[in-house]
Length: 337
Image (cartoon, rainbow, N blue to C red; front, side, top):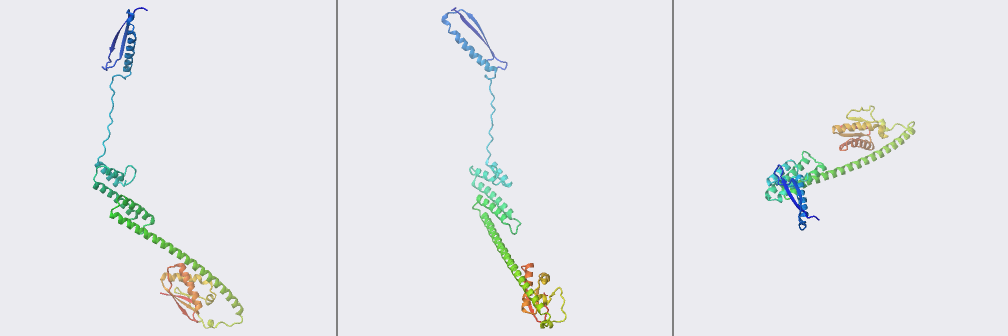
């Protein structure tokens, strides 16, 4: 192996921006003779070349000594107690009492409790929220003389919310009791209406049954009378009561309804419409009635027919009727004011 001597020159150039980074490295090798004992210099030279070349590459890629600008992020300042109080006032004004979640008065009041806010401040804001709930309860039943069960239940829910927020306030305790009293009265009225409706239905069913029974009896009596009349007409003399009746039958008027004695004897259904008409006039005039009849039996039938008709027309009207039983009278119903 020949004895060789290595020599190198290093030239470093800085970029135009005067950045302390290596941008160019020129290495020139000159081979000279040197002794074999100094051959360890060669690896050292090569390592130096690799190191300086890497630094140069970093500089060319912009990863060298240029200072990186770091933008600082400013953390927003925490809201003060006054800010939170203003937000709570806005929430109360806008009816954001317990919703929406994350943006309502009650949640922010809870935050104030955990801060250094005074207890009087927290109590005052809490009372304002509870008072808003009471306003909602009043609106639910306002202007309604007899609030419905739905309206009262709605008002009770608002009062319960107010009581949860401010449990010791006498105002809200009294208001809650008032709502409960109205609910109790409403339930009692509803129960009474149901009972009255059931009674009326039962009474109507009873009257209907009685009317059907009476109609059946009238039909049976009419049939029997017709058979009897047919069998005896040719031979039997006229009844003494018919012979004693006035020769001239009075005419019916608005206040007097005169019936045929034959219709009364047979309890004919043909006179039901006439009875309904005079019943309407009695109700309209709020009048009483005199039942003219030849016998107690005829009176009971005429009076019962009239009362049944009036009940079906207006169940709340109570008829005041008087009997006038006269063997010589024509059967009739007279309106008395």
